[in-house]
Length: 165
Figure 1 (cartoon, one colour):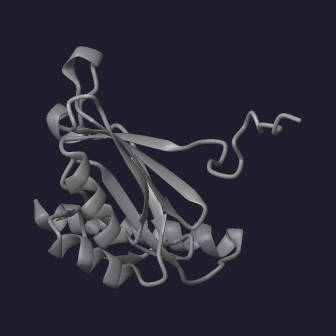
Figure 2 (cartoon, helix red, strand yellow):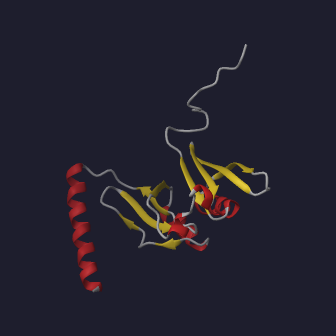
Figure 3 (cartoon, one colour):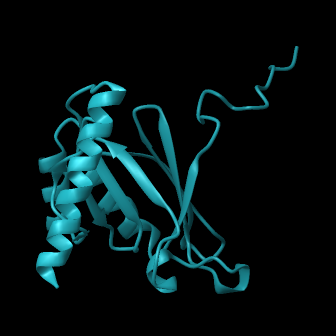
């Protein structure tokens, strides 16, 4: 009797899996493992022996990586000059995770700080140009508390912007 195949492949993938185009697959695998704690599921090489696909996992989430390929229109965020997406990574200790990512070549995009929705967050741009907001869940404010904290945070950011001008 043939093995029944799950058409959604739920053992390995959720409903949506991010697939990032990177400059060098092996370098990106190493960065994501060391900076964010991903585990390598596998790397597949093409006929030329170069990596053409990698899969990493972290707490039941899969991250796919593929190399730049101008013929297919596949370019990294770094090559394009900007990232049209941000990835939100939940971490047990945002301060340590961001510091590790910076040490490994990421660029800070502002300080790590407590956010109005209850997470402590820091944002980094990885070596391939992708934006990662890293957060640690610290509190569960009510909708009213969140609105008040949002207004306070927006006022503080506006004041900082004016002071910097």
